[in-house]
Length: 111
Image 1 (cartoon, rainbow, N blue to C red):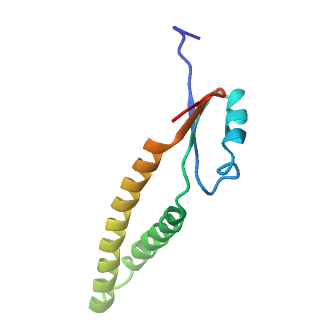
Image 2: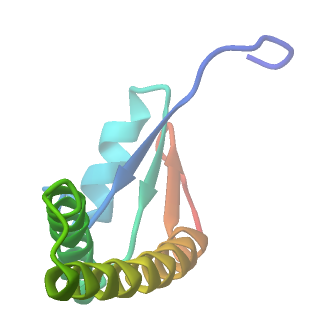
């Protein structure tokens, strides 16, 4: 394959995935595919925080479409700011997880 270019897909395997507890299963699946499998280490809180971030983001967007109510608008703005900080924290934690992930391409693993 040297000298020839072709597409390579990237598959992120999170703690939500079926194979997240089985690096051997990830390795075996990668043998027959043109995918880079990125096996993220377990972070129990990250899944909860991702869900909370998404729910809060949806709430804030919906709440901002209504008529003006000063008390409610202040609370929604505060929730939006908190969620912005949560987003930045999640991004840093995900970058760290990706940096520490096990990588699989056609079987072999790299850390």
